[in-house]
Image 1 (cartoon, rainbow, N blue to C red):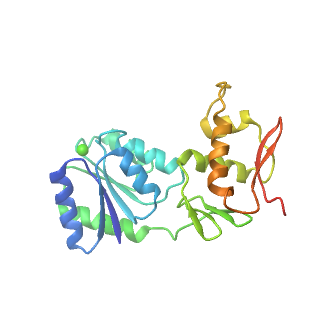
Image 2 (image 1 turned 30 degrees about the vertical axis):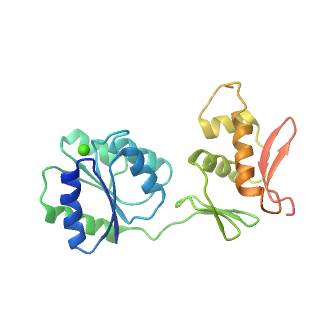
Image 3 (image 1 turned 45 degrees about the vertical axis):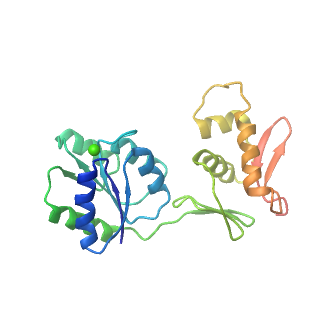
Length: 225
Ligand code: CA
């Protein structure tokens, strides 16, 4: 079982790591909210133990963001504060369990073990167009057998266009869905990102999937289908 430890205090992180290592778990360690989100999105862990007070976005923000993106890895929140309201906030944000500090290591280990057993059969939702596939859970994107690395925003853009099932979407609809803009910022943001997507998913491959409809917008579809 692979466990991600998100903790900014070195002593506490080492304390937790030792206990989990003794149980034979493989560990990953990060110290900030941003690193935590990145590590979680990579989908390489079965369980995460995450402190709430972190540099950058705190544990609850990371959790909310991760769940909004469809992340399913069970997360045990750990907090020094331990107020009832925080526990409720954490569970509402999508935590699977909550442990106030200070805690007994045996309890932490037992809870991590329990969460690991609960790991759902990876429910993967894979979207496909021609030989392009995108896994909306693990965020793995492939063209043929090549793995393609997209930024989170590029991923959202591609996902939105694929879910539009070949329909052409206007810039405004794209801005709303991908950037949450409800006004026209008067920039060529969409065009810039479309260009980046093309570089990554179309440039070296056939058929070209990102389609431009002049004066209307963009679509992702298989032109041969
Ligand atoms: Ca902390």
